[in-house]
Structure formats: C-alpha cells, structure tokens
Length: 192
Image (cartoon, rainbow, N blue to C red):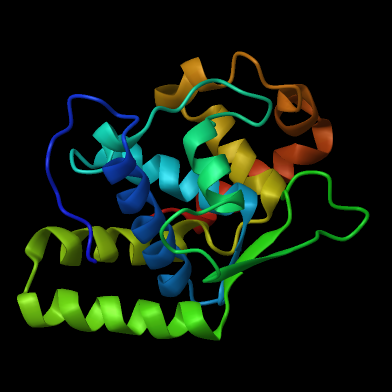
C-alpha cells in the first residue's frame, strides 16, 4: 500500500502508523549510502515533518535529549506493525554515543521499496513524487554530516529553538571550542 495523503483529526491512529512506516521505507530506500543512522533518520524525518502538510498530521515532535524527537517514530523503527522485517538495526561502534546505531533495508525491504517506487511512478502521484524529491534533497544536504555536525545544524537553527530545551548534549555540541570548525563545515556543506 502506498501512503494516502489526507488530513487526520487524530494523529495517533493505526492508519498513521502504516503511513509512517511507508515514509520510513522511502527515506531509507532513497538514501544513497544504503543506510541511515537513527539520528539522521530522525532528524531528516523531522525536517520533512516540519515542511510537509502531508506528513505533519502523522505525529508530533518534542524537545528531547538530542533535539527534536518523536516517540511514535522511535517505536515504529523498533517495532513496525505493517512493514515488519523490511529493515535491520546495526549497533554503533563503541566510541559513537550520538548516532543511535544504523538502520538499513534488507533484501526484502529493497524489493518493497522498488515496488512502491514503481507504483508511485505509474500512478504519477505528484504529492509523493515531491516528497521523494524532498527526501533526496535532505540526503544531499545532510547525508555527509556526521552526528555532531547534524546536531550542530539543528541546535543553531533559530527555527528549531523550542526543540533543544531538554538537550543533554547541547553544550557538548555548540559551546565546545573545537566545534567552531563544525560550524564552518556545516554551513559550507549546506549552502545552496
């Protein structure tokens, strides 16, 4: 099933769960690296959510330990109900305390992704084509940033100020002298 694009009265219903799972599948499938860190997936989903009237009704993001966070998204990554067995979790290395590990599509997930893309293409679904284009743009803009750089971008963006109030890593990322180099790299990387 391809996600339907309709407004919802209740953001916590089973139909939303299905759509969130399909958007995760599309986000993972469009990743040029073939996998995304949990942090990247969460933040890229947040960027989509923040800019798409079709995705916004599906869930809420709140201020959390590493900036914008969605409990619904985190639970869906761990325990999908409709697309079970299509992605796998990889542990981060021992020095990595920010990424949250990595998610990648398995062979069954890659096949499902290709099937969904084919359906979207054959139906000429402009809304989903635009969302996929947005996903590709997000991968281009943020895919080469490491976890600290991605968090630095989120934390220093004035539009996301309300999502950093509970961050336990803000000071480590933003005020650390060494991270001034991150600022230059992040802003040079995402300039259009």
